[in-house]
Image 1: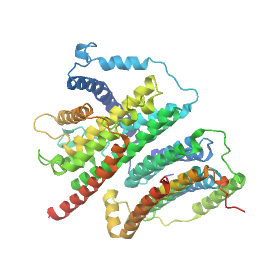
Image 2: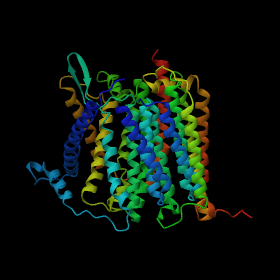
Image 3: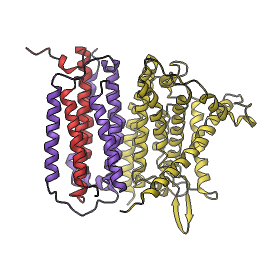
Image 4: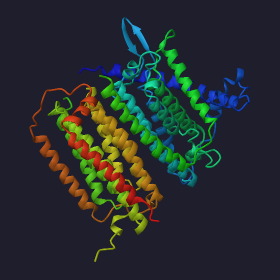
Length: 334
Length: 103
Length: 163
């Protein structure tokens, strides 16, 4: 099959720049600001108010502060691994935006979905990129040459690999009902308000939200970066731009999980009046608001409670749900 | 000249021989297991390349490659559990120091 | 032309990282160099139109087996970075064996006339592989799931701390 290589490379670079700029504005800037504002309102206080009107430029100030900090590498740390670990986390968090469909445009009668690349194995690719983050975290925790970083890295890695399995079972159940692994195909298989998979696959939705919160190390599962226990966990020794890269990777992955939840369970870009992109953003921000709401509501789980929840509750629930979905598809769809 | 079957086979042979060299000459037990993983990957490349160029319709090359990936994961799990148990009892993971039963 | 460039880049990434895995004196660096090796092999699978196998390769090899190896390195003494001799005394003989095997295999494989076929792969390999697993290769499927279960139990029992 003949492929025009320069055009393909230009298209890939252009789309990557577009998606990452979108993420830098939407996820990093607005996300960090939303987190602090929502946290403030839930705790009956105002969030940041001074920088810009109503604190809207707070993230700009934070970024400038982080960029001009001194860049320190600990002396006995392995410099190559220390400096490349935040890159692995940031790139893995950004790469899984390739399969998220933002909407659909109708040009000349055909509907072109707004995704970077509609892969045949979209959902599997997403799970694979989410599992690459663990390597970066382990590398960062080890290379800091600091006992607390190493402990935080090991705890975080064991938490993330434990919660990959319930996440995968939720994804498999949705893919079984939609009949395809491609994200655009899954959105097209949901129609109407009550046809979306949030209703017909409600246990899978719950399992996905819990597992997604644990995958991005957010409260109530943020023991690895517990601010009151391990200083900052596996990124204690990171300063300046590298710290910003770790944070960017985590926020990008949180938004990616929210975007995947809207694609798989809430119907993606479908909605009555407004264009598809606006509905997608509304639904994604609703899920992000839900994630931030749970952050400020629940206390932190202890490590053994966390692992018990994954292996003894979520994984059997996910497997039983796959069994029930299989039965329903085989016998009820006749 | 287009990329043909022999190109993939040569890459797979080189990867296999690198894994073989690691398995034969390293002292650290985990490094030996890494060499074994490289050899399994080389075999998988071989299987998938033959599937595309010689027998595409049957898909048995890709099916076999998936079974090999599964079994490699099992073997890495059990092998690394054995390394940890050996470390706990013998205090070393260098395989040429585990010679308690040698005469 | 683009296909050859992609093949050469992916092969160089795979083989160069494999050389780092095999030769590095620092075991942690060797384990981390496994990640580009596996990602290079994933690229080769995608060039061979086996996208489901490529996805599974990233998920299992780069995402789980690398993490397992890093865990065991960090929980045993390998990660202390001391100047320990990493190669045993049969290193030259091992190098000779590996090089000889490479030479023999490459010369055999490049001289054989493989029976090429012009059929094409199915367009959506994920569902085709699923169908094959449940019709033609169902025995392989069941046996590999049994082996997974047994190795899961075995690894837990072996690695458990004796009370």
